[in-house]
Image 1: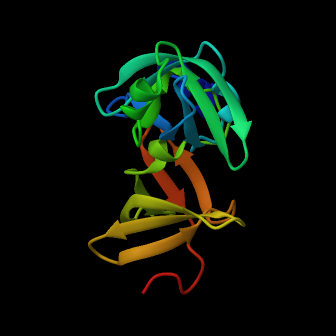
Image 2: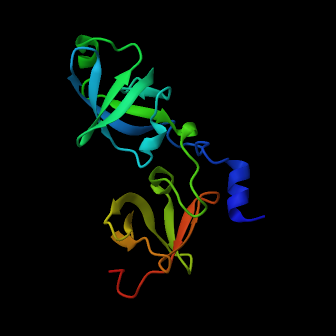
Length: 186
């Protein structure tokens, strides 16, 4: 059985990883627009197509449930209308709140692709088994992502997410195996 098949049997695509987040941020609500409860909305997700009429979302740190009544492009931002938010005053109460979806509702990714929250916190080891540290952040550079790895022995290491450098991301075991280019370690 392939590693992906094993992983999918244990944690089917879309299922939250044990100890992982229950909600994922998909955007930030801005100021009200007009008098009927419409809101400016800044999309943060890589999957904006899943935010459509009828999608259940959760607003604020207390994750109050709402359904999207309408979401449409409006220049650099989007205009959002939530069911039950029908006045400017009701919309104003949601200003600057984060909008979430359940982790379990996220779309499945192709084999070999991972959500950032699945990778952050994983230990990074080299081919010889030396623990280099833990992924603390991922920087998107445009050309490729860079893993920010921090550990006691080497401090902070910036590891490019390239196929010949990042050899394996194993969510089932819970680690990342790398082959570091010469000179990357201090």
